[in-house]
Length: 147
Image 1 (cartoon, one colour):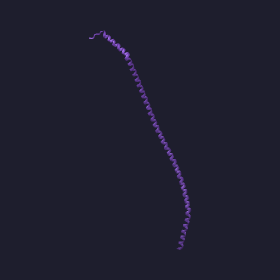
Image 2 (cartoon, rainbow, N blue to C red):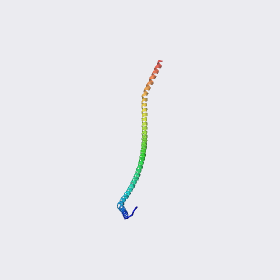
Image 3 (cartoon, one colour):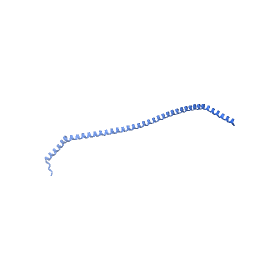
């Protein structure tokens, strides 16, 4: 059987007093340090989450800017190529017009030279023709006299 005597009561009171003192002196500061540590870890975790969120937003913004820059670069490249093609076409048109003008000028010069040479040849051919006609006439008159 269990006998309750004064020693058990004194041991119970000593135990409760020891629990009270340990809670105040030992467990209280330890628990407050643990609570503070938990609050610090929670605030750091929130700071890390906020930092991650800002980093992801910044990264997304950079990606959008890079995509915009690429699109703009492509538009600029296309526009530059288009302008270069237009300039080339315009230059070819000018060169073609210059070539046609030079060709027309050269044809005109050739025609003048041909006319000049033809006139010179005509003037040289005329005495030969007259000589040949006279010769033919002389031969025909000589053959007519013989016959």
